[in-house]
Amino acid sequence: MLSVLSRTLPRFAATAALCVALALPPISPAAAQRGISVVRDAEIEALVADYARPILEAAGLGKSGIEIVLVNDPSFNAFVTGRRIFINTGALLMAETPNEIIGVLAHEAGHIAGGHQQRLREQLSRAQTMAVIATLLGAGAAAAGAATGTGGLAQSGAGVMVGGVEAARRSVLAYQRTEETTADRSAITYLERTGQSARGMLKTFERLASSMALSGVRVDPYQISHPVPRERIANLETLARASKNFERADPPALQQRHDLMRAKIAAYTQGQAAASRLFGRTSRSVPALYADAIGTMLSGNARAAVPKIDALVKAAPKNPYFHEIRGEVLMKAGRPAEAAEAFAAAMRNDPRKSGIIQIGYGQALMATGKPENLRKAVNELKSGLSRAKEYGAGYRYLAQAYGQLGDVGEAELATAEGHFYSGNTREARNFAARAQQKLAKGSPSWVRAQDIINYRQPGR
Image (tube, rainbow, N blue to C red; front, side, top):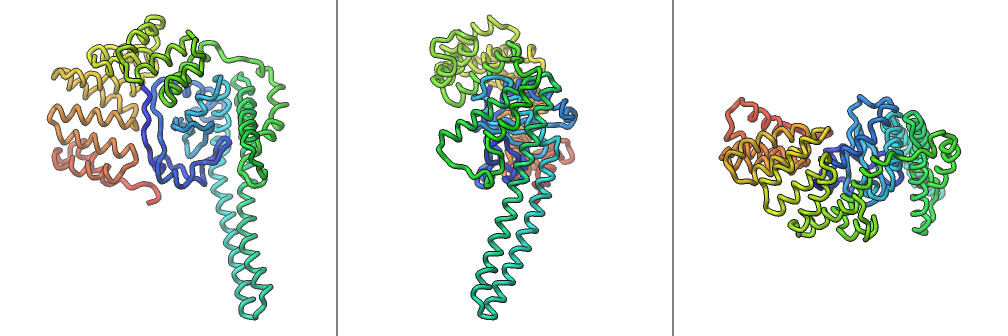
């Protein structure tokens, strides 16, 4: 069940200055104000976590609480901020092999392990000091020139100000290019430690180089924060090819999971036609059939999608995500009782015990309309949300379930939680205050509402 959720950037502490990106500019200040769209999906999250786990262990970050966030963006990019690695759905869709994404994750792990964000803060602070000093010196020279009537001195003062700011900016860019090179080399080390090839990294940089060449834009290497792709390839190719793992291919089972992920992203973000083009219009591969089933559902023809997903479930009855999509299809076909059974099967077969799948189960139980299922739906939704706290849709379902039970206080608290985890703290406080009026003072729910009311975003 792929969901796209809006998140305001302060919730992720991602600023343009402190994001360390794979190859493209970090999020702009304008985007920071609008927020970013985050993708939540049990299947994709499980796969990317499996890609990242050995890399993070190799980087010494296995117990550091690193979180991977999927961003709904069609460009090929990834970046880090704090203890989070953000990766675009465009990167997942364009990468033809798991190894390409693993290389991206290795690069971003290099930034975190190397403490690059903290050092970037320090570099920015030094650059700011340089710019301030240059501005003061320039202003002093300009003032002296004006006082003495020396036009040349005034002009030189203005030049000092501009030149000082430009020198500070270039020093930060040079520092960032150095750190990108360091992260590339760290990635090679992590891949070698985990017995994986660096071929995917090279392919990523070749893709970026081709895109840059096709754009026809001339790039001044001293005016960008990353080494140009051809330079990165030259720096890494000899080292990568020297590894005994260079020719090692991804395991077939992992490749199929990767292709299933790409099929799902293509169907959800670009439509059924795009998914067909991805694998060929006549392909009968499992990923192509998966994309077809999802695309049929999304086109509004859930009834026709049922036999398509049923065939996939029959062929792979232990795949939890086929059962999950079957539950979604049956929900859209107006068969919630059967959907609940499908989500229950997904939960039984899911080794990661995804909260997102459990939330789907709770939603289906609620949709049956049976009074005896409502309380169970609440319990399932709360349990799922305890493991997927930032899954906003789950709070809407929970609020609906409480509303049907007549528990308005808990319904408004669930709504407050949904706004809170979406970054809308103003609405979260409003609903939390309303909830408190209906909740027993001092109860756990009342205290949680008070926590939301008292919350202030860091830096404010």
